[in-house]
Image (cartoon, rainbow, N blue to C red):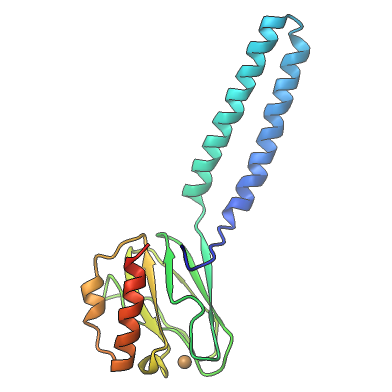
Amino acid sequence: MRDYLKQPNGYCVASVVYGALFSLAGMTGGLTVKETPNFPKLISGNYLSEYLKLFLILLLILFSKSSFAGNIQIEINDDETYSVKVARVDIGDTIHWLSNGEGHNVEFFAGPDMTSLPKGSEIDSDHSVIFNKSGIYLYGCTPHANTGMIGLVVVGDDLHNLEGIKDIQLSIVAKTVLERLLKTAQSN
Ligand SMILES: [Cu+2]
């Protein structure tokens, strides 16, 4: 079970293009029928347009998956929690953190590249990060990470830096929360 809502808005664009091409394929099929009154030719013409439709569908599925990055939203709640504790995204996806409470933010503590962690946010502001490097990212709220307000982002199903994440200095409470989140990250 996945614990986030993915909103690949690219799929909407893809479905519009798909719809347009599907109609076009239908029209071509229609023309074939009109122009070939001969029975065997009509059958082969229809099969051809079916193959064309199938080909276009497959092409568009591939196209929509490779060309459009996904977006997920995480709410920063007043009860000192992030609405999604373990977010799973693909490389190139964006996470939007929406400020829903007071006195919280997002600060990155660890990631696959410790020399360039994603930028954090100001208190009480929305935040967006595009994840271009696969691995696990640990973040939390600057004032409340020690009381367990932390979250994980797993990019590209890549857990190679799991040990590095475990080594981050945290309070005992935060460590306990982190252990639980890492277990979730490791399970599918
Ligand atoms: Cu906070």
